Every structure is written in structure tokens, then in C-alpha cells.
Amino acid sequence: MTALHAIPAAELAPLYRRRTLSPVEVTQAVLDRIAACDRRIAATWALDPEAALTQARASELRWARRAPLGPLDGVPVTLKENIASRGVPQPLGCAASLLNPAREDAPPTARLREAGAVFVARTTMPDWGMLSSGLSSFHRLTRNPWDLRRNPGGSSAGAGAAAAMGYGPIHLGTDIGGSIRLPAGWCGVVGLKPSLGRIPIKPPYIGRVAGPLTRTVTDCALAMSVLSRPDWRDASSLPPADIDWLDLQRPLKGLRLGVLLDAGWGDPLQPEVRDAVMLAALLFAAEGAELVELKPMSTRAMVDGLDRFWRMRSWLDYAALPPERQAKVLPYIRRWIERGAQMSGEEVFRGFSQIAALRDAAIAATHGVDYVLSPVSPDVAFGATKASPLNDPERPFEHIAYTLPYNMSEQPAISVPAGHDRRGLPIGLQIAGRRHDDIGVLRLARAWEQIRPPLRDWPELPAA
Image (cartoon, rainbow, N blue to C red; front, side, top):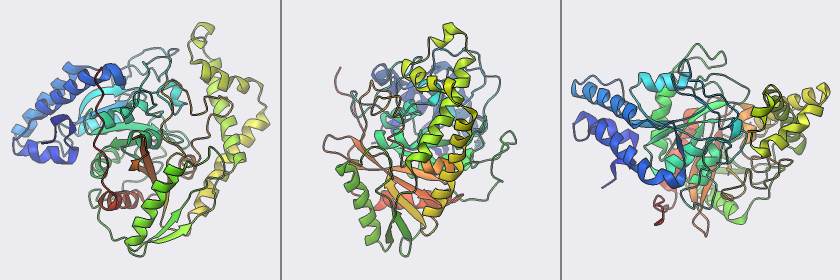
């Protein structure tokens, strides 16, 4: 029998309706799971068990009256701490932040609250979300449940670790260069970066999206049915669309699937990761899909330009702080942004221009195929105490060559578990689609769940 904390979200509503389970029982089981594991994983922040149980009791009453707010009523969720929740401070992973309670819910938080979801915790992130790591100057070091010596990835570090560890079925993260897909890939869970604007967000920013991390594609789709509802506060959001998010079946025969195994720059692709992606491609081909080898879609000049632009953005935030707060920023981040002080306007503008170049290159490269299969990252999870795989602030983005293009091109992309390496570390398969075809990406991901070889059980922590 599945433990209560690990029951998928899609299965909870029928159980609540039949009174087989109650939201209070499930929420308590999730809280017990966090209490048993989080001393070692450190995925959560602002944990408030009583507030969670109060929400669960309200949900229990709605189900008893046969008046639930929807299929997520009473479902435990976590929120990345940079997604505002009314009354909860947002440290943004950085010890330099002021802990002022948020005045209102961000759009994703508001949609989940309206749907009756139970907020069990907020999840950790690195300083300002600028690392693919669980290392933070504010939070405890977040670790990968599959191997505590390894990193969960980031910047949705706590969300990825929480999903893998079973802190409930749905976890909300954000992604501007891979920050949902990287932790999903390295923690062996599902992580969707939707099309830009599909989930309203505040504040909106170029390439920045919110999206769910879950253990199943169906739970990811269920979350999208709520999160994609409109909110006027995001001027970049897409118009409301009539999408049946749980219609996840589609034939594979006749699909043209691009296979991208050379990103054009960055860390070399490791053989076990390559083999996992190729196995996925061949299994899709066995079901009738046509495979098309793709050439690299991005260049070193593109990422270097974006690096300069992001450094300047972070430098302006840093320079606005008084010296005593500057000193609290993670040293790696300080070293990375300091060059922003010497950048010229021309450098920053040329860097910004590479966003458009990267967008156009990604759209052109994927124009002739229905979907693209690739690694999420060229390697498996790196050491827990490192800020990035190379731990070098002058080469901070070598691991995001496969994920970054789709943020700038606004295309949906999902990470789904593809297997494990010889040490038992998860490997992620990325599936990307055309702009706004979020449901198509979810359908192909669901098809992969149905044809892939069996995966290992979920991680359990070794005895302390």
C-alpha cells in the first residue's frame, strides 16, 4: 500500500470524495515525513504545521459537505520561497534580504489557495536564484535525497528534493535557465517549464516562469489545470485557453522527434547520460516516431552575452545594498557579479541582444520537428557543497546549455526520469515542444512514462 505522504495528487480527490481518507490525515502524514527527513535534507523553510492543519481541516469540511473547490482541494503542496505567500517573508535564499512578510499572494499562490490546496511548507533556493545548487547564504545546505553527498540542483533546490523525498505530491518552482528542470532531472522527478505566460507570475521577467515538480506527469498536468488560470497582474500572460490538461493520450506514430546530443558549448555530455537519452529516442522510434538528428542551436557568444546581462542585473541589486548587507551575500555570487561594476553600456546592450539571438536560433532549430529529445544536463548531480558543477564563478553556466534556450524562446520543456547511472543517481530526459504546446509536451512525457523501462524505487535515507 502506498504511504499516505506519497499518494499522487490525482488519486486523492476520489479518496476524499469516498471518505476513505481525509485531507487532515494526508497533511499530517506529509508533516510527519518532513519531521522525519528534513533535518538531513533541508528542503523546507517557514514550515508552519498548525497553519497547514487548519487549511486541511477546512478542506475536510468542504469534502464532508460535498462542496470541494476542485480536484486540488486538500492536496498538500509546497511553494518555492520566492513565490509570494501573503504574510510569509521571502528571503530569496540570501542572508542579505530583509524578512518582510509578503503583502499579497503571487498569482500561482492565489490559484492554489482558491483551489483549496494545503500549503505545508515553502522550499529553499540559493541566493537570488542565481545558482543551480542547494547552497545558500540564508538556508541550510539542501541535499539530494538519492545521495546526501550530492546536490539537488537549483534554483528550485528544495522543491526538487521535497518531491523526491515525498513531502506531498505537488511542488511549485520557478525557472529562468533550467531552475525547474535541473533539480527535477538530478532528483529523479517530473518538472515542467511551461511556455512563457502560461502560468501568470509576479514579477514577470524575460524567460522567467513558474511550474510544477511532481512524481508523475499526471500530477503535473493536474497542477497546470489550476495554475494556468488567468491573473491580470501579469501583463505577459497568455490569453485563457480551453485546454483539457488531463487528456494525456496520443499516438506516437508519425511524430518527428529531434534528438539533440550536442549543445554547442558547455560541459561535455557524459556517456551514461547520452545512452539514457538515446535509449529513450530508440524506444519512441519503436513506437513509430521518426528521429531527426539536430545540430547545436546555441553558441558560446550567446551564453556569454546573457551572462554579462545577468551579472549587471545582479550587480545593480547588490550595489543598492548597504555594506553590512553586501557582506552577507554568498561569496561565489559576489565574485560572479563584481565584474558588473566595470561593464560598459555597450557590453550590457550587446549581452541583452543575445536573448533575441538565442530565441531565434532555438525556434529555427526546432521548426522542422514536433518535439525535441535531449539531456536535461550533461552530467548527473554534483557535490553538495559546490555552487555549480565547476564551482568557478567565471564559468557558472556550463551545465545549462540544454535547458537555457527554451527559456529565451518561450517554448515549453519538461524533465522526466530517464533512468539512473551506475551509482544510482537519476538521469533526466528533456522533452521540448513548440511555443504554447504545453499539453503536447505533457502528452509525450506521459507516453514516455508508459514505454520506459522500470525505474528504481524512490529514495529512502540511510540510517543516521
